[in-house]
Length: 294
Image (cartoon, rainbow, N blue to C red; front, side):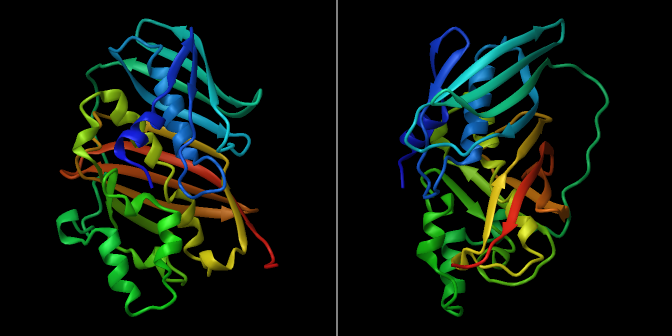
């Protein structure tokens, strides 16, 4: 895997010219760049071109091409508008001169106004009542030989607690083949060593927002990772930041998939702090194609 220092260095981008940034791909055992990393780096680039008193409140993105793990990612930021209260930025991510991703982001000065939220579902167990995923999976695997810990290790950050710890109430939905309701969630907390920079906290929330959104769309359908009988990819991604973000404190990511059809799955997610505050929301369409085994 990688150290926390390596992880953070590859989540941030380097400014190489005015409104121009570069970033490196993070190797996570996937054949292409993880979409959450591109989301996080794009946000990281855009934030650095806006007055710090304006906070990101929304992001709308499209994944255009698979990201190459061996190529630098160039982020071009277009400062579309700076108004009295809002700023708008457009970001295009490129590799080898071709766009792989684009996004529009909006920033706002903090204002007072109406305030309400939908509450965190009351049946959700708190993180103190759940085993860390690595321990939970080892426990489940003793009674189920179909659970391949090494395969899961190659495809997930859940085993690298130096970076982020994840605790999943209904972990069996991920590791045991079956048909389940398309609803899921997990608690996560990044290391305290990430520091206090608010840009870092928002960048890491964008990173993890791409985790499991499409997986929930597979839960009503019998599918096993080891059979390799489907092709999946994120098509677009939207994110809304409602309040202050502290990813080194426990956050619950509640996800559901209200609809899937025509090889597309629609997923949506809500981030709740441990005290029940809704701090951010997400939505995504993903491509899911069932293919024949070779």
